[in-house]
Image 1 (cartoon, rainbow, N blue to C red):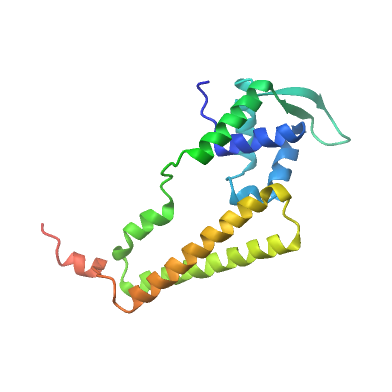
Image 2: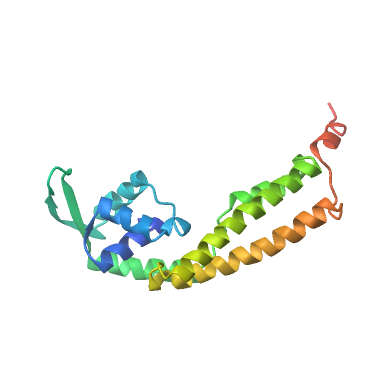
Length: 194
């Protein structure tokens, strides 16, 4: 297979392994399950992935119909090739580490382009945002609203978020106290040689 199965493609195949669905239903199901924490889901990207999976014969349309005044909708189901691709894709995603180049790491690498106070404020702002995300995850876990199959994912995300928070809080304190060597943008301007 020449098509590289994306994480969103894996999610779509997994949905269709549960039962046949139309595109909007897939989007609503992913949104309801809060899969935005797992994969980036936008209607346009979802429909593009669905078209590509159909092109690759990993899914197929079964019925096209209209429900009342709603637009015509095509129901898709997974094929045996899709099931094979899904199991292979999940195995690869879990077993093979990939450097995904997170935006935060790029910002952290260039943090000394800010003055120290701005850098501390940015890190503390990130801490506050992650604390809010963590609270939301804990609430979701405790509410019983999270489908059982996603509890492992939620537990993983909660654990990694807690670890990130611990590191970020320590880093912000060390940065603020001057424990991190610092060359901010203003001092670099003095070093520029023309």
